Structures are given as C-alpha cells and as structure tokens.
Figure (cartoon, rainbow, N blue to C red):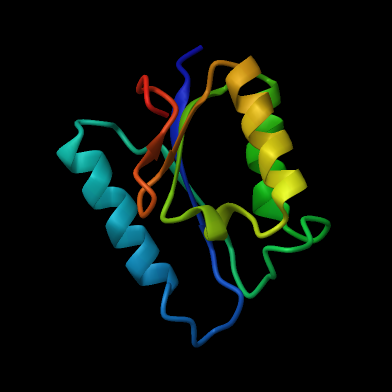
Length: 116
C-alpha cells in the first residue's frame, strides 16, 4: 500500500483570513516546490480548533495515520491543526510513532528534518 501525502484545512468561520482557498493554495504550492504528490485535501469548515469532537476531517486523518496510510500531513499553521495543546501534542506523538511526517508551513515545522 502506498502511503499518502495529505493536506488538512480548517476554518473557524466563513469570513476567516486563512480561507479554504488560501490554505489550499499554500499547501499545493508547497507540494509542487518539494515534488510531493498531494493525494488528498481534507477540510473541516467552520469548526473551532479547540474542540476536536466535531471535526470529522481531523478524525479521518488520525484514523488514516493510525492505520499507517499517511506518509506526510501538511497544514498551513499549527493553529489550523488545533488550538488545544494536549490534543496537538498527542496527535504529533502518534505521527512520530507511526512514522508520519508532519509539516506546518508558517512555523517551518517539519518532522522529517533533524531540527523538526
């Protein structure tokens, strides 16, 4: 089974500056510049980053990671992935355990590099 490169997009409101269009452009641009085939874009629209309970896209990605289906997860910023430090930490720990690279573009965070 080929592992996927997945982009995750989340907006809290319909009128957010980090719109779905902007996040999509940033993620696809990163993939093109780094010769990564973007296999899937998963969107949680109009949902808070503080509570993961209703974020279907978040849960879908975490299930894919748990099954070993994701090679790389790309987000525009850590705040798009989550605003709860505990949930963010736990999800990144799972990514490390499952050998999934996590990239946050704004923070230049990349688990595949020695700096992270």
